[in-house]
Length: 440
Image (cartoon, rainbow, N blue to C red):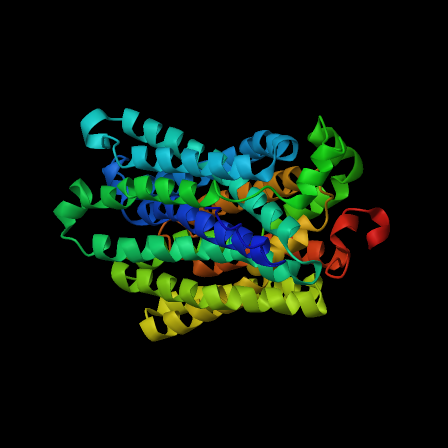
């Protein structure tokens, strides 16, 4: 008896599979990445650093959060090179494995009280591995979805990468809410480790999903015709250096995210303000939940009216609302913080955050797309990561000068403003012509 042939896939089957793989994989991977941010603000100053000087311990803990961003440009050079030579799928599987292992190991580390300075040293090493993994994750997932997507819906499909990132941040926040509510002794002894141990499940589920995804038609055609660059970085710097700089400047918009998720959380729960850990984690959770709906809506709008106007809404509106949000925290009014937090992070920031995978990816040709996105974004993200450390300095010795932090965020957002104003509009350019100078 013959086995019936499998029905042929519809034209939208692979784009949907690619979008689903990008969403789920990014959510699982960035769950790992963001639980570190919550822990750095709430737990690690006491666990991994010298408690005799709380202010310095907090500063060092926030700096350890930024270490991953410093490692990301290095990871981008390596993973971008191999992603443009070997394919998007291989990098997506590798990054998930590396993130899962490094995150699990953080949950197993000894504390400062047990081994002294060895504890923060090992913590930083694991954080570096997290950064290398994250460097290739978004660029490979975004390249995968963009190259699978119908030309007229590239914005919508690529937005699933960032929607997944927000989903990961939401999951990380929800996991930390019951953990943060544990009695202090249990929280500091074993409770904080549980979210990191869960990364084993993250790694297994993500691998099962991603290994079933096909390589993109654009890359497969490029490889079959012998058009894969032996040295993608050389081609990138020769033909696309202006766009790399534009992506670096645009990626600074991520400073809005790091200030919102890490510094603002630390400030709100400090003695200067005294808001509860659980309450602020709920603000982050609800803002991320709204972002899950806002991101694909903004992305769909960019398919209709263009990438630049939607991107600029986020790039200009986010720093303005940052002033209002940090002021609200200074008042200690939870309802005000909740409303402005959702408006800032859930709605307005999502305009830039949701469309940058298409906006940046469309600047490059298939030969160098993953390299261009990875290198450009990770250099910008490195600055955004250390923005938390600088914010702690600008906040003054008491850590309560919120207006200086808001102004600092606004200055960093000048880069995205320039990037959005000077970029070519590519929403209507055919996929095969992306990256051409005449495609403006």
